[in-house]
Image (cartoon, rainbow, N blue to C red; front, side):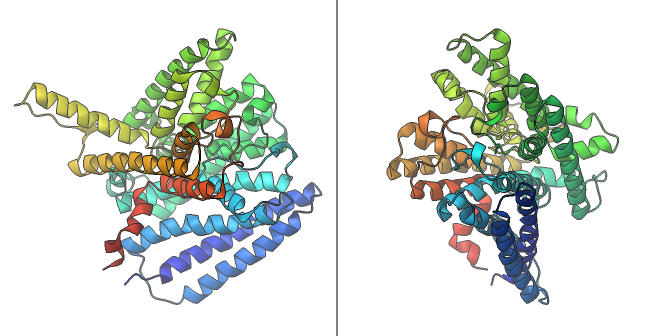
Length: 482
């Protein structure tokens, strides 16, 4: 029988932590003289009380967190955290329905960046900070999960990174807890560097903090309706590109670089593939934009590289409505949504390493057709690629695409037009943020969608963020039978 005691224990601790985090936007509202600080304080007290109650109830139990408990815990954390993170949004001056508040909270914690809030320029400061803080916490959480949890659960080929993190003689740090601590410190340093860079580029202090948290977390929540485009600053855009890329590279490689292996980042096959794919897709977007606009060449290139980096890393910032660049651009951006960034980063999508593994499988199969007697070994980062990893990756890719199709069809049945349904499903399961079309495109908003579509998209965000298998395995009856 599944033991829920360790699950409730961990959730209780995390809820108490989340409740304490609500005090930060409360202080922001106090500083700006906004009455919403009362809302955050009340939400914090409720969340901390429930979290501490769960912890006290379960702390004396002798329970072991097994594999099945880990699956349930991983999904439950995001579902429950979003439920409580939505409280301040519901009770704030924005007067949001709980559906909208939960959608916004899930979008924040999963670093998706889709929003239902209209007139962000006039939104309360505490709410703007809370949205960004949720993405920062979610980005940090997904990095730790990708290093310590998903390899253990062998989700979608992530076991490929378990040996690199823990089982080799030159492991980065001796324990997962130490790795988590190092990742947290690195996350804070990157966020601080990004905020300072934004400030130097011309952003106001508070906006620099907000955008730094959502840039490093590749989340995309902004304090402006026009996103980064509102600043109309090439310097700010290039700073954003640099830190969006930084957030999309494996964080463990940064730790190796600090520990005396600076070439580890460059030598990594996943990183090299990421830059090649990003460059190729940016050039294609640049070509398509060239056919539709009359801007100077340098401006077109900056628009293409910024918006492609934003979509491929899953950040979701925008400076222009690239949906107007024509069918070629729309197809390129849709492909970028699915690809995503590197494993072990804050980015999302299918992940670059899976693209590399699929490419190696196809190349090996093609060589065997040409040379039937030949022996060809698939390799990743110079090491033989186990067949179980290839099988897991191929299964993940199939299930990822199948989930996208099911969600797109369901959105269509709810009443959404084809462009909104398809791009909405893609952006939600890939945790990107904006979709395509006049409703949810770069200059649009998810507020007009019916509540049923918002709940379905919130589920899609969760499925995409937790690597599909982690969520869907809970719907298999055999999982609940020992």
